[in-house]
Length: 161
Image (cartoon, rainbow, N blue to C red; front, side, top):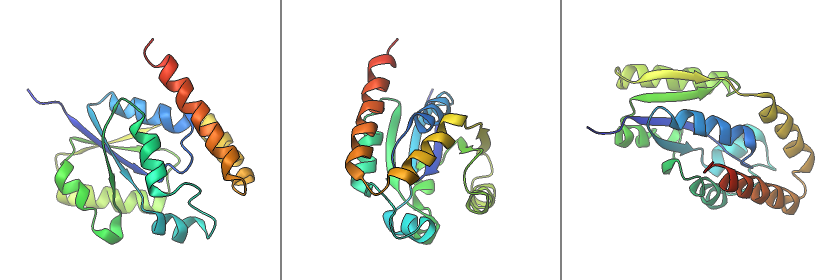
């Protein structure tokens, strides 16, 4: 019997505790496949000073999470080709994700992958508070790198308990 496949998408620019909780909860539905948004799309949607971390850095951070099966870089503009490879049983969204893009993606999933179940995962306050920190600190990437490293180290130390 094969494991169920779970997909989700996001920029994951400065991986924070709220992201890790979201990803961990999604992984409870099966093998987790993460679709990371490309740098150029983040820049178009969030402004010229974003992303803070390039695709390679964001992928390296996500790879440190032992419950992530595989990471893709993909978007609507590139056809969301990763979905045809993943063929997810579940697609998870966070409650705070961009509604316009979320609605477009749900429409695409329902049209092409009729058996895929849509799941919405509540994002907690930590995600919002951390986002404010990122906005205030985006001028100093070194501070963010150190904080992200601490968060990942904390996760790795306590995730096995």
